[in-house]
Picture 1 (cartoon, helix red, strand yellow):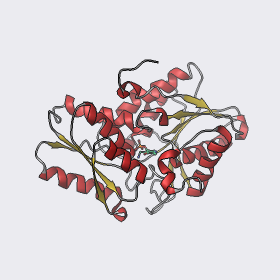
Picture 2: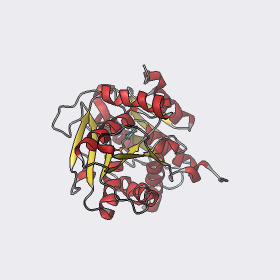
Picture 3: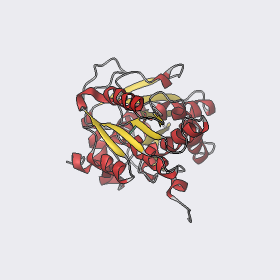
Picture 4: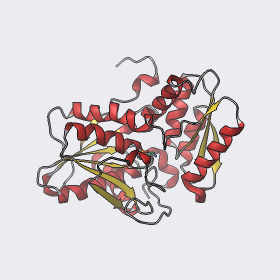
Length: 303
Ligand code: PMP
């Protein structure tokens, strides 16, 4: 495959059939988003946010991009901004992984850390404050920007449908951070298969199942507020997965399948296996593995 730039490598990631024992002889397919050049599902979003900002006239020459992020979006935004020669400031709660923050900086972004205990809301507030004081700046704000679910509805969802050709999908399982991946992909799959069960995944310490917010080791998913992208969306099941379940799956995926997957992938697999037990035999389940374990070595992901 001959390509002109890393940007040509965004999207069209593999959909892998997981060769593992499943309840009820279900088949689980995982979309391997670590195959994007920035290493995660968020490269699609980074490019969409910047291109949308240009289209609507919010971004022009020299505009400083400011974005609150848990890390992967920062890498995606920094990659896209590089393409358009735009300066980037990323506001990251300090708890997020050393590797992710190092990669953002390597791409040329400036990183501004906020206290971990203020969570993503603290980073959102700080990003807005910075924007007020910097002329010609723009905050794409992934947590509210309709380009977020839209890019998954129009790229990732159709890729899954194309790869599975005419094979019916019984359930779609994905984690939620901003909720963009889940909402956009669920819409694309619901349009094709109205009977599909949509299953959103969160770690313990996230609020979707009525729990109280607290910290968790699973990185990239978990919400402090219900994502606005869930308004009007039909969500059939919410699964709350413990850190232990997520990390046990991360180890299993490397050991049994040779696959390096991050903790949110481990959570997605745990919820997919639970769904397999609840659905009729021979069901087809599709899930998303957002990134790889390699960016969590400093957090001792395999220990
Ligand atoms: N997993 C990982 C590793 C992530 O970085 C993110 C994004 N924060 C997600 C899952 C969730 O994606 P979304 O923001 O689209 O809900």
